[in-house]
Amino acid sequence: MYSDSTFDAILSSVRDKLLRSIDELAPETCVITINPDAAALPVSQELYCTVSPTSGSFDEPLFDGGGREQTTLEGGIVVKCFSMLQLDQPNQDSVMLIDRSRGVLRKLHEILAALAGYMPASEDSQKTLTRNPLIPATYAFSHDGRRWGAVEVVFRLSFDWDLSASPGAIV
Image 1 (cartoon, rainbow, N blue to C red):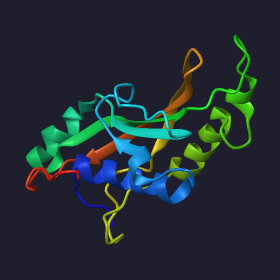
Image 2: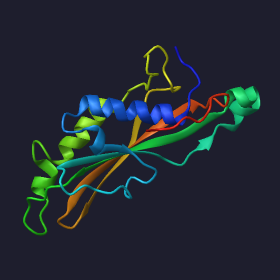
Image 3: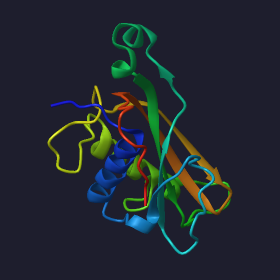
């Protein structure tokens, strides 16, 4: 059953799903942040992941038909996974890309396996929080010289914002 929701509940559900799905992640290495690139990267960790909202829009025709009860957000969620160990020679990225445990291609697979088609649900798992499952939209690779390599995946998100609920706080 679908219910109106709040953005914080959806972000928390996505983070929790990643923590359950990717063994190397822990609460201190999988964080919710506004800017996936601005999070402080811990140098002592091999893997670090951020969950961030994208900018979006509101579906005007749905709002026109349903008013406050139909405040439908069309946006996305960015999941960015950083691999912190650089084992490649200068100007090469083969280990960073294809290593079986730390390679960013492996992390892309794990993120997609965890979240493609995932329906974020309330903590009691009785109600889904989004109109549709998370749909992979884009991905990109990046690196910072010899410090880290990363993969970033954007998932499309559509949900009806519950304006009667208090905004809540992520702890």
